[in-house]
Length: 149
Image 1 (tube, rainbow, N blue to C red):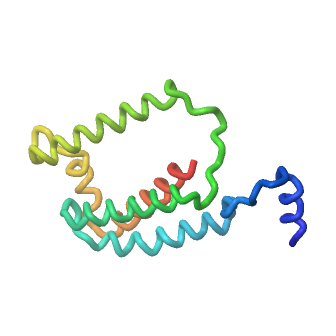
Image 2: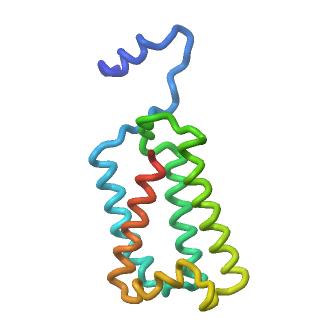
């Protein structure tokens, strides 16, 4: 047993089994791994035409993959600087609910010039592949950063 393992074994109460999986600490290597994966995915996903069902499926697949990795505990989550309370979280829940409701309503009813989706409004910015690659990269890295907190 290494020194670190001996210290952990000594700190454990007698009769208690060691944890099967220790959380992985966040390191520069972890951050660079995320950047590398995002840099690989972004150019591939950016080739898919915007505002199509394949683009939606790709976005859901990649987003679900990131959520799955975070839910599995890699890397270990950081403790919030202040405890998360309902008062602090409520504005974010309301914002997410309103945005989701608007997007779903326009998905069901269809985008109209008088009531366009956010995606339709931002669409002209992402016509070229270059901005879409940057958008995917920013979306992946920012989403990862938000989820691991």
